[in-house]
Length: 114
Length: 110
Image (cartoon, rainbow over all chains, first blue to last red; front, side, top):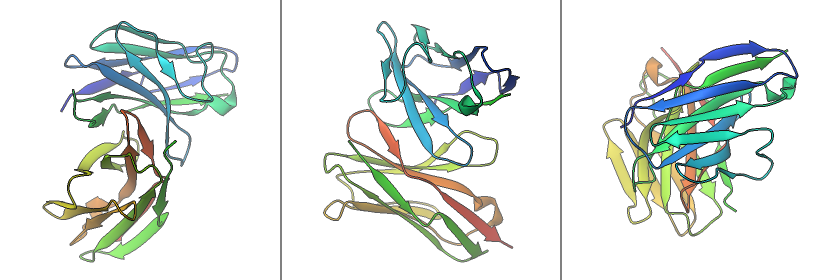
């Protein structure tokens, strides 16, 4: 399975600022996903990021708040904009092994907004 | 859209006992059902999965069963060990998107 890394692993940010999270994969993948996991909760899909096309956002998530880039087949970024304490969560990227539905997750970015 | 329910929310067992976690899903078109283990401070790890054309799958001490008619699937862990302690999530997908259950916190006591 693919090896996925995320940067930063954790951060503490002030409200009103923005943070960009990076996701790097050790192999080329078509499908990448960004999830949010609020403290003690399950995983919620934010958006699907395919290379060469605009990200597809799930209900309740908008591009202005969570802009995503996917410049190539091994890298993606998620920006959390104009942060508030409610944005304090773990943000996870995942990739799908080609044609299998199997998703593999990165270690997550733990964000605290004060 | 798909909705996945998971029970129980917490499960405490003694080392060596078996543990069973159950999930139900709503979309009859779903055809892939993975299980993830998430340890504290880590991302979810895919531990086993099953597809709609299979009723049961085993991998050493873990097994998953699927009943498509009833739209439920279960994770079975035998001979539990303290290192099995974690949060387990089921998920279901119909078209390239995973919908996760609410998670089960499993605690295995020595």
